Image 1 (cartoon, one colour):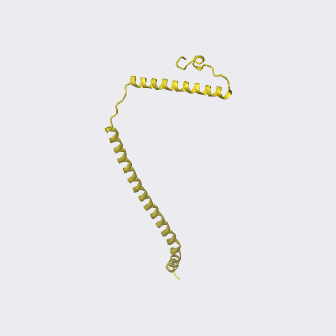
Image 2: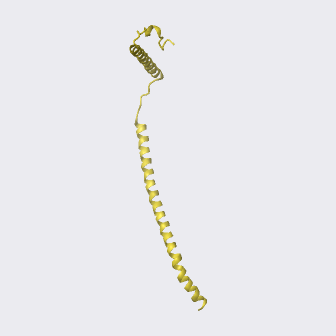
Image 3: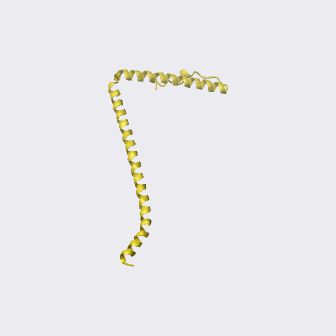
Length: 121
């Protein structure tokens, strides 16, 4: 047996042992690449849809006109809301004390004269 015949015999035995795993690795890497390409295309479509939605939102925001109140009007409305909340909290406190006095059976005191309002503080 010559050197060429023995090396050919060794190659014929080793080739299937190497070729099959290499083929499997090649197919696996190809499927990974195809999956990556499809995910990238899907992501690119989603980004384009997001960009168009943002452009539409920007356009609708520029088309939308809003009347802004002046600072004086805003302060007046805030002060009115604050005074209304204070009145409501005072009424709630009065009701709570009346309920406590009713539950204990003691006579309620005049809460409006004895407790100063928060506006006076």
